[in-house]
Image (cartoon, one colour):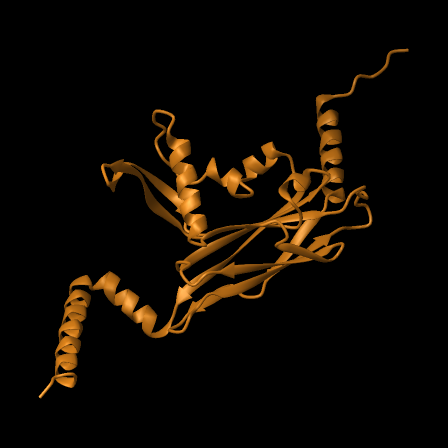
Length: 260
C-alpha cells in the first residue's frame, strides 16, 4: 500500500497552525503611564513618570520554571553631540581631536528588576542596548575611523552619566505581585523637552518573552513656552529685547545704588 505524501499546501497550513498555537501560549504586556505629558513651568525642578505593567496570560499559557524579570528603557529626544578630547599642552589643557555623533538620546534610563546578568545574556543585552555598557556600542551615528570611535563613545556616555542624564538602576523595576510591576522614571531638571520613548521588555530564564512600547512628552507651557517660541521664530527681536533688558537693568541698578 502506497503512503500518501503530504502536499506543500498542507505543510504550510500545519506550520501556520503551530505558529498560531505558539502565539496563543506566549505572554504579553499591558502598560500604562501615570502621565503622557509632563509640563515644564517656571518653578520646574524635575519630575517623575510612573509606569505600570501587567503580564497577560491565558489558560493555555505555559508555566515558567523561574520568575519573571522586566526591563524598562527610556530614551529622550535625539540630538547631535560633539565630543572633544582634552590634550595637555605645557601647563594648560586644550580641546584636541573631536568626533560628532548624530541621533544621540538626550536622556537615557535603564531600569531593571534584577542585576543585568540575571536577566539576559550579554549578547542579548547588547543587541537590545539595555544598560550603559550596551549603550556605549550603540549610542549615536558616526563615521567609523581609525578605530578610536570606542574612546569617543565611552567619553560621551560618561559625560552624560556625570550630568545625570544617563542612568541605570538594577532595582528600578519592582514587582508588586508576580504578574504586576511598576517603575518610576525620574526626569532631572535639565532634561530637554521633547518626546520620550519607553521600551518595556519581559524576560524569564534569560529569554525575552514579550515587548511593549509607549511614550510621553516633556513640554514647556505658559511664559516659558512663549519665550522659547520667540527665541526660535524671531531670533533678532529676541536678541534685541534681551540686550535692551540688560541695559535697562544695568541703568536701574546704577540709579538705585548711586552714592550721593
